[in-house]
Each structure stands twice: as C-alpha cells, then as structure tokens.
Amino acid sequence: MRPVLTAAVDLFDTMNDRGFVVLDAAALAAAVDSAGFGGLTPSWSDLPVDAWLKDGGRYRSRRHACFVVDDATVARVAHRAHWQPVEYNALHGGLERWFEPIVDDVATAAVWQQLLLTLSRWCSTLKGTQRWFVEAHQFRIDTTDGIGRPTPEGAHRDGVDFVAVILVDRHHIKGGETRVFEADGPRGVRFTLTEPWSLLFLDDERVIHESTPIQPDGTDDSNDAIGHRDTLVLTFRRGNFQGPEE
Image (cartoon, rainbow, N blue to C red):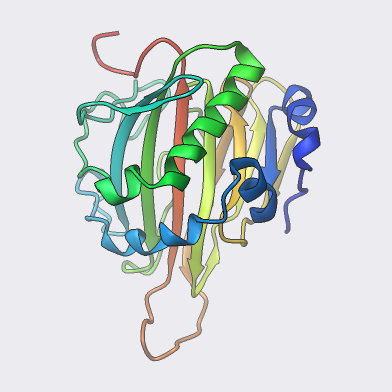
C-alpha cells in the first residue's frame, strides 16, 4: 500500500494533527534545498555487520554518529555508544552498543549538513527553538538469512522527541511495510516506502512505529541474489543524548 503523502506546505499542520508525515523525494529535496542525496547512496554498501543483534541474526549492517544542531550549525561530537532504556527497546535496551562511525565524507557532505539543519528547524518549529541532540544511523537490512528484520524489537518508541526514517534503497525484496500507530489511541496506518529518499517524520511522543520483515522477491539479476533495504534513521532529542547516566 502506498503512503498518503503530505505536501510540504501542510507539514506542520499535519504533524500537529496526527503526529507523523510522509514526504516524497521531491518534497524532501526541495525542503533541504538540495538534489545531492544520490551522492551519499554508495556509502550504504560499506556498512559493517551489526554484532549486537540478540536474535543471532546476520541481516543488519550499520554505522552511527552523533551531532549537536542549533539553528545555524551542525557539530559532530566525539564518538559514543548508542544506548536506549529497556522501556523503549525490550530487546537491546540497557546495552551500550558501540558501532563503527559514519565516515567523514558522508558526515561533512553539504547535503548531509543541510538535512540535519532543516529537520532540526522543523523540530524547533513544533516544540520550540533549542539545541537538538541528533543520532544518525545508516542501516542496511538484507536477506542473507532468508529474512531480514528492520525492527527486531517490534513496535516501539525511541525515547526521543522526533524520528526521521528516510528510505535510501530497496533491492530485490518484498515486505518492509511500515506501520504507525497512535501511542494512546485507536488510529493506525500501514504503507510501504518505495521511493528512494522519501521521508517518514514522526513525533516519537505521540506514535509508535515498526517495519515488517523483508524477504527475497524471487528475482535474480545474476549479479546479486541477496536483497536489501537501506535506510537513514535520524533521532532528535532535547536536553541531551540518551545514556545510562540519566
């Protein structure tokens, strides 16, 4: 099922109404004022395997980095562990998970910097102007094990203010349906992101989300029979990064 898209001019009204929006690639590129996303795409083919999966899978690769963003600047901070409390991640919560850092060529690219600035300004429009503590995750979920799980923890919140999920690529897969539900209400939607560099933007305090497993779609181009789903996930939090010291 295709997502119901939100026009850029309706972004804030729609966020206030239902807690999430989906923008197509053209709307995101226009908002960021750049068409340079394609230059970042090859970096998803150089992600180390996630060694922290507690289900024993080999289907996820990733890189991670942290930034502090104010209205005009993006500052990368010293590499740190990714940490979530058990209440938000029952599978991996409570662990200090160290992932390989996002490479400098990606993190310093003009389009990357502009993306973080633009989305942080959206956050400030919705919840007040302030510094935003941003965690960035490059994910590749593949079908090496026959099935890949984008959200092995199930339907969840992330314990932040906002979450951006950007689809980068889908290759020879089926599945990967996105599901978004009110955290405290009956409404929910389900759809599949298929367009590269389209965006799902979520108010993490108001909705929960998950993506269903992926499987091979049965096609084989003779070059690569293993399918994959690549995403960029950005989380925005007020006050500080999540950590065990809180």
